[in-house]
Image 1 (cartoon, rainbow, N blue to C red):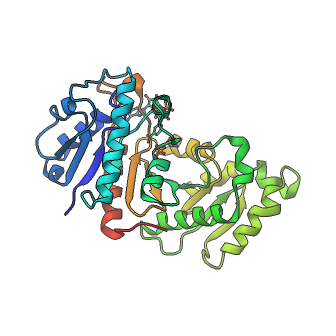
Image 2: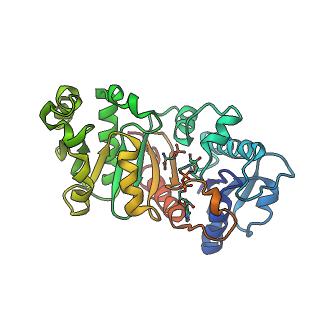
Length: 308
Ligand SMILES: NC(=O)c1ccc[n+]([C@@H]2O[C@H](COP(=O)([O-])OP(=O)(O)OC[C@H]3O[C@@H](n4cnc5c(N)ncnc54)[C@H](O)[C@@H]3O)[C@@H](O)[C@H]2O)c1
Ligand SMILES: N[C@H](C(=O)O)[C@H](O)COP(=O)(O)O
């Protein structure tokens, strides 16, 4: 059995400590893990996992004080993981959080990790989250809000709905009820408060309904999450980042897992970021990371090639 790779993320963030916490809590499972990060940090981890050093040999991060060398380490760990999966060395990747700003400052050319793995593994990614109570697939994520409306073409809606269905089916829901958020207030109110739903989003969704019988047309986004919590929908399609992630992280922050669907290999991540403000203080909760490992293993076991 190939090991599952953990990347350290930004070494000044909470990534290193949540990985260490996972290893301490799961000693019997450590042999199935390859941890990728700076050598001096790897030395501090318990025995058991394979340890793969990247970056400067003597680099030691200062928790909460990110720097350029740390960003290089974070990037190198992702490169090592992506290449290792392609080479058949690792079964998939669980990434610890990185700082997009810090990576951009050293010339990293992607908005986030999702786009990095999509480029390296040649996929058509969809950013999805599964929490304890909500499942969400995002139609768009790392783009400015003013670009969202024009991005919502038929291909993008199709791949997002397919990812939403895959997310629910992976948890045993054969015909998922998929609720789609409208873009505008009250899903456009029949065109009074916005035209996108009426003009092209709902027609595209109508076209998809034979393939996805549980698919809704655009629903008012302000109440859709409450309806999902009441059991009306199994999974929600949100049209932009904060539309989906504000409710998800409000309800499920400590539990939710970021899953990239649409890739030929498995990549999951906790739903939180680097949390520089608490790094190194023993305050970081490792539950989301732990769930990310569980979800990655389940996807690897049930669907070795998780492309849509
Ligand atoms: N997967 C990823 O790589 C990923 C995901 C989200 C954000 N980010 C990046 O992380 C950086 C910081 O983002 P942010 O401040 O918006 O979000 P954040 O998730 O880092 O922090 C938001 C709040 O939650 C707290 N928090 C976060 N993780 C926690 C944990 N495990 N236990 C306890 N409390 C926790 C933080 O202290 C903070 O109060 C940004 O550069 C962002 O782009 C990366
Ligand atoms: N948009 C995600 C979030 O807010 O949780 C996060 O930035 C992660 O992005 P990547 O998985 O692409 O790094």
